[in-house]
Length: 270
View 1 (spheres, one colour):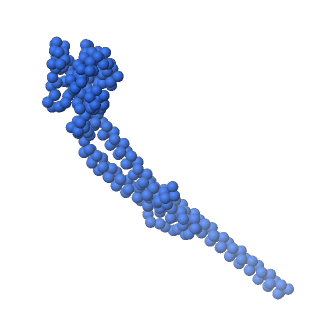
View 2 (tube, one colour):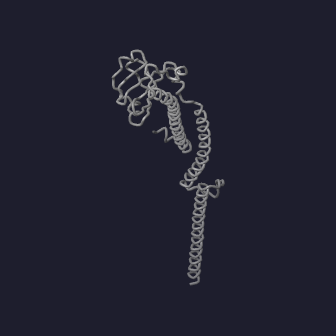
View 3 (cartoon, one colour):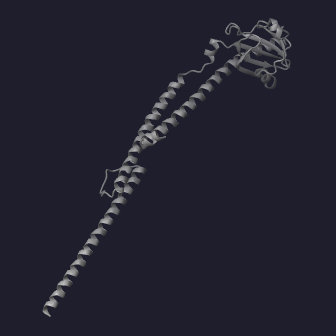
């Protein structure tokens, strides 16, 4: 990834933070979307469970299955009604051609299996081989029978069960704020790192660095200031050592000169 190596530290850090933030927002959006859809499906199931309970009461009082009328038939047109025994065999179905289903076992249906084991269950979307339509199924069981109601999965139901996308605007606003704050933070950090990099390049060339602009008052700024001060002290120590060496050399040269002059004078007197 050569293009990534060419990016500045600030941009690499911001890109990583941006990808992480967007991934978190996308994951939360997907979770919220599924959660809202599940909540709406459970709300619809609760309505149908109420219908099923009333129909079970009528059946327990001796009503014939073909005389039942679902209370939500007007609110949910096309409501399908199926009555089964506890073993999942169809006793009555009000859909076209429902007579041909009588006696057919439905224990492999998700909502029927759940109703037999837990007393209630629903299936969000499943295609019916008998009618050729797709339904939302809700089943309720008592000690004697199972009642299942089904709503055609048409445009109206899809709109009813679809998640409200209003929360996406909130997530987008949060993501924008996070990205802005992340850019400012990474830009500040990137400036610190860039200044340290320029300082290291000058130090590598052996340039004299007496002072630099003050760093911000944070942890990285304090570390940077400590490094600059240590380098300045090292430079000063090296300069003092060189000055002492030059002074000692000049003193030695002066001693040699005096020694030669004294020797010449002695030779001249002799």
